[in-house]
Amino acid sequence: MNEGWGGEEYFIKFSEMESEEFARGYSLDSYIEGYELLGIKGWNDFILLKDGQLFSCPTVPIDTAYIELLNGDVLPGCLQSSSDLKGKIKWYIKPLIFGGSVGKSNEQWVDFELHMKLVNYWNNQYKNANT
View (cartoon, rainbow, N blue to C red):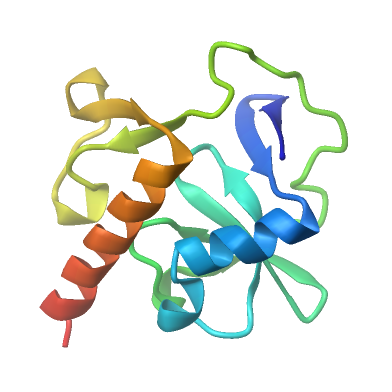
């Protein structure tokens, strides 16, 4: 895993092995199919690869309606690491799609294991609300 600042954004880039492991952990194929998980941009968006093109999708909701094509140079080659952020992901306690707000009162820092559980929980809530 390679993580750090690339300009104004924080990136987490997964190795090939991590990509498959995290895709399973996030249950990516149960929400969208055919995408390879490359990493996370800005703590809120997955970076995906399909048919040679880069896409972003919010971690909540993982839904084809929210997938956007990314500019090819979105993944910086060199990241400026930050030891105080390593292994942490900023999480909105109440996700924005459910009416949560951007701000410190709705944020917490979590590790990857908890992040995967939260992403799955809230995506299941979203899926159930929209079926």
